[in-house]
Image (cartoon, rainbow, N blue to C red; front, side):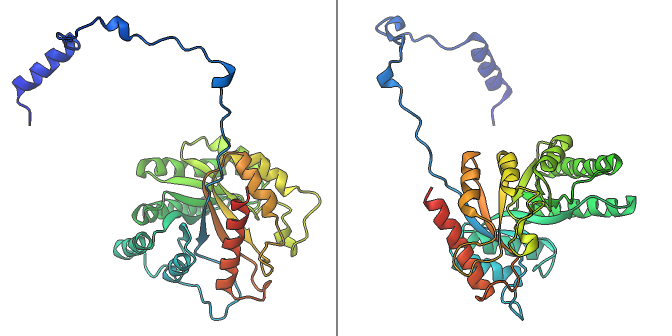
Length: 320
């Protein structure tokens, strides 16, 4: 530790400015930089970066295996490792045997040992209802932030629902997002708004009106108004989900890559050959996490569904 005399001497030296170079043999003027004038041959185009999106999976699914082959968080961690994925996302009310810190720390260490980052912890949100219901949802989101902090997840997921038409309901919804966001800023956890289902305009409105630094967009490829997922692969002609994605891709902080029909090795209900270039064009450099909700749409089992989905994403990204 420095004594007070030493500190005073440091302060005095700093106040006087830098010590002169007493032994410099030449004037420093000769080292002045030569002015640089760019020419056409010096101007190199900035190369386009290859996409470096990470591939992961969400530790919850609507599958068909009975009994489920993937159920506990441990089973999902093992499967993500077997597939050599980059990360895993969790849901606060699925797969955990306990919410005690010791158990959560073991889950985190399990991920670290297997080289898996944790993307986010899915909470609830969907802030509509009575005052009592809203208060319970807000407090649950805060509690899930505390769990995320122990797990090492940087973000929680919060739903929005169908676009609200009542101005008072909209105001209360925004107040809830703001309160949770303020708590997140205190503890160092971000919020990700998941479209569920939404239009592009509604996602942008909620994020802008909430106006919190830690509020990003958890981009769900299948949960748009009019999504083919709601009608066994048939889109609603009144909605263009790919246009909604173009509207909002610049806001994405994480992507929930929905899969439904993947028997062929290529998702058949939504088009990743269109979606991933939209993300690339927006400069997205984050995660693509497999989320399966196809139930019994495939002949293969749930583990094979996840493998085919991850390989499909890897293939599309590799060809860009």
